[in-house]
Image 1 (cartoon, rainbow over the protein chains, first blue to last red):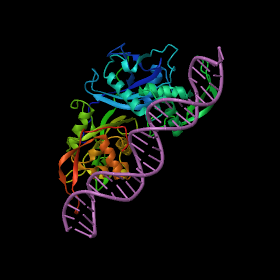
Image 2: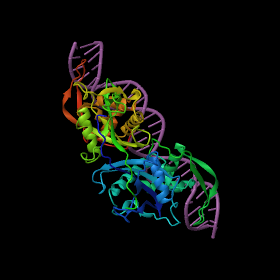
Image 3: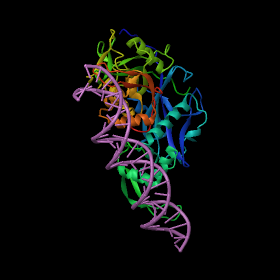
Image 4: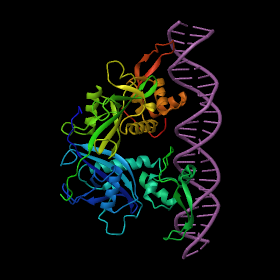
Length: 222
Length: 222
DNA sequence: AAAATAGTGTCTCTAAGACAGTATCGT
DNA sequence: ACGATACTGTCTTAGAGACACTATTTT
């Protein structure tokens, strides 16, 4: 071929794992197992294994499974960060993903994951602060036009819980009446038989819902 | 380090260059200079040069300049296509970009670029059809909420030209009155002194406009 | 005056926001 | 009955679509 083979950069996959913890949107970080920045909490990531991973999504699944013990999680490609400066080892490409796990799914067990408020995650190694920022922007931006935020809830949820999730993600209060109207108009949910009673205080039982499709994107703004 | 060095994949950059030609949205293709698929028209792309490119955007600028003779063009990262199967040579990562060039900017000269209707570009090598499809979806999706389609026009344009561009991009007719109202409400444009007279037939002269900012994203739908 | 495109006014309808009101439970 | 949350109804307003109308030029 006319064009010779060129030196290849490092290629990794990094995952911004977001969840809800104590009512706040949080990122899961993992202490790095190797240099550089060994021991420092960072985004969940790892090398692409070209002999093992069929594609980048397979690498994401492998890394989530091996490093965080997680499976069956919603994730989506975010963007790719590629430059000579982002990694002290070499020219480096990070294919970044963002993933959402239901509230409480990370609690219990002896997971090495550390949860930090997404807005105040502190200084992270590499360009991970920038990647985190991009993930939050994506969630905010796409959140208003899709059911992606619902992926932060368990499969079955109440309308109030759904509203609370959107409020947390968007960072603004929403009117209850308008919210329900929109959700109903868009026909995103189906009713689950059975009722939920809040445990905390006495009150009226609530209808339970489930998403009709894993993720729906629409034209109207929530 | 605990994690050994891993074999690295090929990393390339591919650019979906879109422009308007004879009233249709077209992609610019370039015959491949090397195997595989030597001579076959494909997306404009090339290896990342880690000794030369500071980051992926620098690679895009270099490739657009060297292979297509273009500079100062609008482009934006699209997505990354990474798998073991997409390139017969090896496990391969393509960081894909989409770029818009003003109508007519490619005409004249002896450019090796071939323009094909974006909707009917024919069979392309690798997964380039899939990349092209993603670029069109992005342009359609983001187009309705941003001034990105205006990047298919020269710097100075008329309201009618702008409307025609949005109509072509979105693939639907827009009401003239509503269009002007929205564009004015959003305060995206500034008036350029001087008038344009259509050359073709006698008619009223037109106000000329220019974008206030290179790209504006808004909340309303055009 | 006619042709042609530029640009405006207005009516209707849908959806959003605000907010008050009603419903159904436990205690 | 009261507290608490679930859920509904209605008023007002902003923006979208449809469409008719006016404006300014060359021929």
